[in-house]
Length: 176
Image (cartoon, rainbow, N blue to C red; front, side):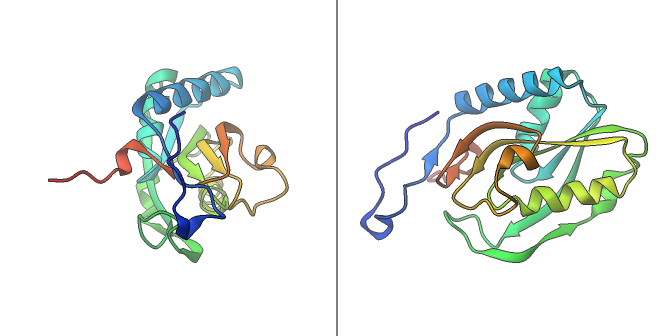
């Protein structure tokens, strides 16, 4: 994984963000695909918009899955580092998921902070009648984890654990 820059004086007691590269994402999706395949390939992959879409598509390609769907569920109030969170995750247009009855579904997001967005979305999927819902993330930020004592008990497939904010390559701001 990419190096983290030195923390600023403002966040001296908190590690600085970790900036991932596209090579990091490729390695993480490869590791996740191996984990998922070992437990049996799903029939559909659902990516949580926005951050989960790129890893969902990469995983679907690596697993040979053509049924890729999206759902928008948000918890942060902005895109900034250590952005504030809403009390509960908010779903928009859950009908976009379509019929999941009887399917083995893999739910994908880029990161689990508290774990609330992933848990909320997994429950939403279970209400749509799939035979199985599994979860996968590129990373878990243990500094924000609130869903129980151990992320591996709540999330089926995790590529890495961290204790800091992660900035993914698709989040970087570029000068124009």
